[in-house]
Length: 313
Length: 313
Ligand SMILES: NC(=O)c1ccc[n+]([C@@H]2O[C@H](COP(=O)([O-])OP(=O)(O)OC[C@H]3O[C@@H](n4cnc5c(N)ncnc54)[C@H](OP(=O)(O)O)[C@@H]3O)[C@@H](O)[C@H]2O)c1
Ligand SMILES: NC(=O)c1ccc[n+]([C@@H]2O[C@H](COP(=O)([O-])OP(=O)(O)OC[C@H]3O[C@@H](n4cnc5c(N)ncnc54)[C@H](OP(=O)(O)O)[C@@H]3O)[C@@H](O)[C@H]2O)c1
Image 1 (cartoon, chains in turn cyan, blue):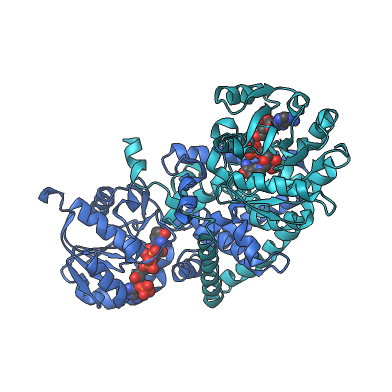
Image 2 (image 1 turned 90 degrees about the vertical axis):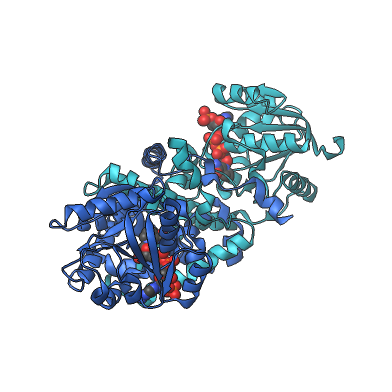
């Protein structure tokens, strides 16, 4: 097993959904000799210890990063600068510092001038997650067959990029290298705006007077409940995403709204051809996503239809 | 088993996803002696026959409804009037005529003056479905533990309403009685507008020049892929929904857009408190939907994380 060791010592700062899933995938692959974990939440830290997700547990991230060859920040992006300042004095020369934040340009701006010059800073973002938070909800398979985007600076050390790439591949992912600004634009449309409109429609339904909350709940299987999944994602994490990827989100939201105006007009004008044309085109995109192995082909996401009734009775 | 027979003869017009699921649930429960099936698509009709979903198969709906005690229209709502005119001469006195259409006021307007006075017309709508179409994709459990809304007129025969209610309960559903206009408003927010915005964002992503289609597909696991599921629903069915529930859809879409303008403003102004407040509130609604048995509690809808990789390798 020892030949799979990629880094002698790894430190994870933040042991929530993503951090704990990385920890499990590291242990599954036997990728390190010593895994140090730090989290600001004493509860999450003790849950992680109970789950045996690492070898050492520290409230202070400075302790965790000491001697680490790879440090990954797995906290909401709004905390990065403060954590960066705290850990900077403890970082070993030659260490790789990375992260999993959903936004990249802001993260680079927040970290690059607080980290010492003797570390390699290679930002990352695994495109994988669930709506749950905290260490108990992580699992080793989260990154299997998913993409992880790395956004190294132009002058980043190639060896460090390669080592981090190898790490994510060992965790189950395909790695893509991308410019940070482009990452933020791509994710605005594939993740951030979808979350924004999901949060919005759930809020709208909650606010109506003409339709009761009980009706929204009972009849949610008509489509609404799909949106509640991503609208149940962590509020702090998502607040930070919108605070730090503002421009790209506003640009993509603008495009969405332009298109929605045309669709609204088509409904008003009873333009059946326009509606049918759009609804036919959108079918093909799902097909491509399924063919690319990024979505299940099971109807209704494979939601359990058979069991729900028996669970209740 | 004979004591579960609720109607001696049932006719289903349209044997797609919903019709074929009703057929399977009827057979599962042994709810009729003779099940007649009609569909305009010769392919679907012969698939239904191969799957043994009924006892008789007719291209002409007029043949299917002869002698039937219960007739259910399971075709796109835009076809109802034509089908109503066709079957009217063959309907037996005392028969119950119902439907499964996603819109109700329009359906009543389309059907009530073409159906003979000697039948009881009780409109219905099961709040259950998947993104797939056609008879091969139906399954008997589709309606288990889901709601079915009936929208009888004020002067509808109570006995007919009760018999149809008993039928849907035998099929696995809870039945709610509602005014047709109110139904259309409730479904506009719980189903129709969610579909419209899902279709819209998938269309927007498809149209972008700054982000390639390949990027949208690869990184869709960030949230976007959730929307592609309902945006893969049947184009004709959904075109008809928007053509026939226009006013309620435009009203609810207006509310959605008002709220989205405020959210857009909050992003622009970096109003973290507003964002965090909304994102916290929306979490609770999902909880209520899960508690009401209308959604799975499994993370990520219970999507298979473990199998996808091995399926590929
Ligand atoms: N969830 C996803 O789908 C997903 C996908 C890709 C990337 N990401 C990124 O992954 C990161 C973590 O997200 P997550 O879903 O894992 O969130 P999470 O489950 O809430 O975990 C975050 C953990 O970090 C802790 N924490 C917060 N502030 C801290 C600080 N200053 N110092 C140390 N620990 C701190 C949190 O404790 P408290 O709970 O007590 O605050 C929590 O234990 C975010 O940057 C997010 O953008 C998330
Ligand atoms: N899918 C859902 O989630 C859902 C949920 C609740 C209610 N509904 C309602 O259920 C109804 C059917 O939807 P579905 O999902 O079952 O659609 P579907 O799978 O496409 O099935 C509709 C069937 O009706 C056939 N058909 C079309 N026009 C016809 C005509 N004039 N005469 C006879 N047969 C005709 C279709 O044949 P072709 O394919 O050849 O046109 C198809 O076999 C719609 O009114 C819809 O609003 C759907």
